[in-house]
Length: 84
Image 1 (cartoon, one colour):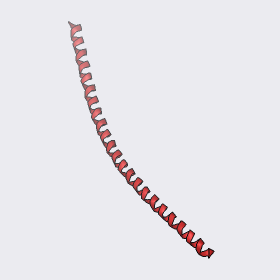
Image 2 (cartoon, helix red, strand yellow):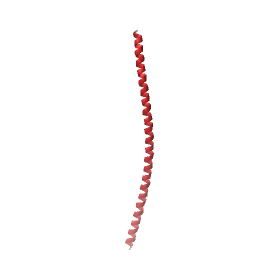
Image 3 (spheres, one colour):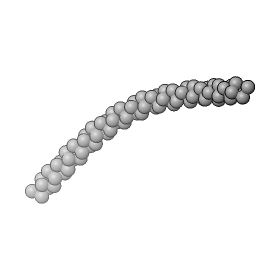
Image 4 (cartoon, one colour):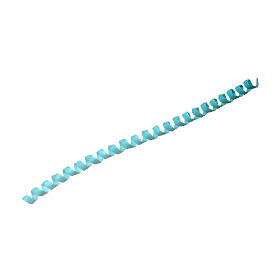
């Protein structure tokens, strides 16, 4: 009889430990999901920032190309004037 009581206590303790572990796992999962959501938000923000930077780079590259073409044209005209 005493052995059965001891076994029951062990099973009860095992059950309580399992419940505690399950609750901790649930809490950890929730924290991980919240962190994931936060990181996804940061990623979205950084992707938008990157897109803006790429667009800005494209504009500056076009401006540079236009300026180089104008410079070449002016240098060509200057050479023609000197040649005369």
